[in-house]
Image 1: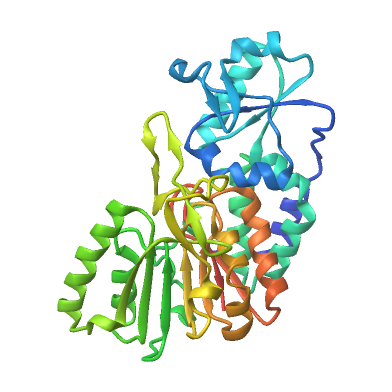
Image 2: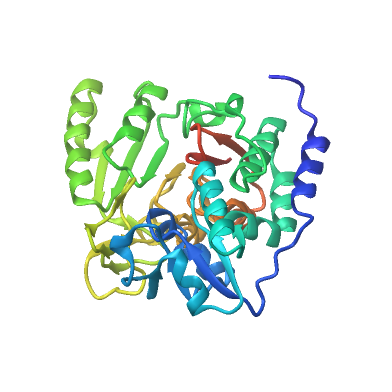
Length: 364
């Protein structure tokens, strides 16, 4: 990798933030009523983005509701809005570019990518995170993903690393007393990777998974791993449930196609807490247990997980490998939140896939 000019990279970020986007007194519409918008729902709330309508190219969705708002087609915009601005909700640059062209062709409406709006709005916080990062590779990676998500540049694949959650030396060290907490254990792939990296040397593993299908697969895998690594039953603990800001019950999100299985499980519906899957706060579950290492890939619920782990983060200062890619707000909010909770941490960022997925914040 060539010598990294950190100041030059920072200047490139600053240049991308020069044009501010003002949505005041505008009629906001969001183009894209699919999985990305589901993941971005917490971002919409955080950033005060309240759309009048969602737009989608799929005619099957037209006339239905999504996040409480009607889904329309692009041709309807002129009949329902007088001063619209369209926010494009997609994580794929080629899709964003196609949407921009469609919008120009249909009505020449003002349009922006959601990530572009969020990052320019919070440019000061983005630069705070950039300055907070420990090494030059982290700074380059972080800037590359910010600019790629804004469609200001093509992602640099030379910055993609393979050893997700364990890329840094501190996360690879073996410790026979280490307590590893896997939030969003999925089917046990990270647990298996953990055992390989650590050569089977650890204290205990706690694996949280709220998706029933994934949980069963997790159980099959852990039984195999116990036999292969000669691990006692009480060292690997499965928990059927999610991780959040408080200990409660949550229903799973319903769509017209049934439950959406996104990554490591179903997405909890935060507005319905009368029944459903058990959600645990880390502070409650580990009130009397030490925690050494937390991994979290929980579909935009990472911030709630951190909120529910404040005491553990202060008390134990566990290493953390946390996904920050699920929505644009997480890219700046999660590092700054952790720094606020415990100022003694160091921070790094690595990218682990050739798109905007799998951006991981390493905290240690």
